[in-house]
Image 1 (cartoon, rainbow, N blue to C red):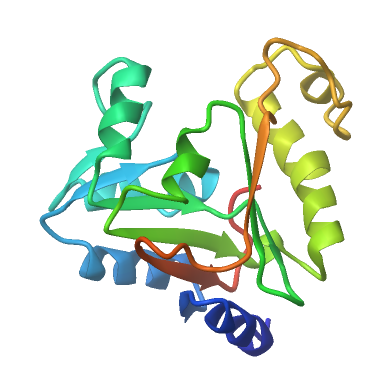
Image 2 (tube, rainbow, N blue to C red):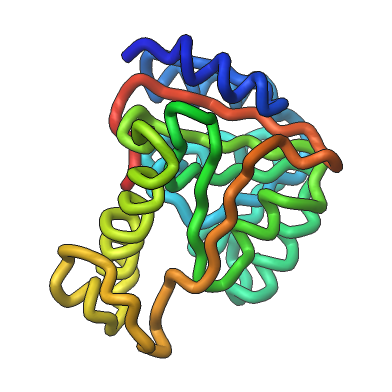
Length: 200
């Protein structure tokens, strides 16, 4: 995939951008860049597939629920105070470089807005849609149902796995949508693009 146009749009929006052919190259780059730091991570299949929780924990202190041995709420608080934060992008509008993330608890999306020295947003080519509308449709009708299924939630989208039902389930995971039109002014932000499918 040619990321030149998307890189141009993201850089115009203020983001630093790195592009890699493979996940292995992206993971090696991040391990070079992040050293002797505290690192928070959101729940992410992209991060899991890249093995970043394990590799970054060799030279950093990593806070990630399901990995750090502490209650989830405590881990989320520790991650929120980390110097570096990693999360995947649920969707990117290819024509404008807008980045979309949907969340149920709010820990991931809040960390994409404030509180860290630097945030890395990771995205495989499957996360890129032609425009904002198609990116939003993908986030709601592909990403959220797959994550609800993975987490074993009792929601219509998890049961059927086909689309968003805009449900009122107490286990609903799509409760807030954050759109990054531009890089946040309070911290460094870098988008790491990988030319392979990663996560949902």
